[in-house]
View (cartoon, rainbow, N blue to C red):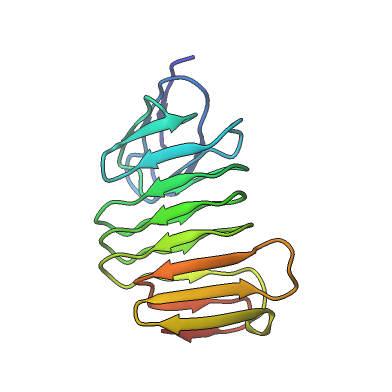
Length: 168
């Protein structure tokens, strides 16, 4: 159904549900996570609302972070510091302004950092990836061939691996 969720202050993790929901994170860093979604999610902190899938009709106030689920999600940040997590599926993440943390997750993802100092997170050691940079575009391919796939990144300044950081 249609629900209203309010954060308690501090860092709140709010799991998104079906229906036209309103999320108010309050103070602190707050995330709406669509980890239980049964299909793709399109959500934008810049617009302050979700536009497709389980996020359709949702509204965000004082939400700084979004997490997708098991499908091909499209998540957009605003001009503040955001964390966007695609999880599984072929996701598109757009950081926009601010110093953003972007994590594609499994499969092939498209990641746009935008203005600000943006970083992409990777779960494994640096040696498990092939990195190719051409201008403002970087591809990061997971070498063992399973799980993370190949990400294409634009305007991202750093890659954070489990064992080291690579500055672009």
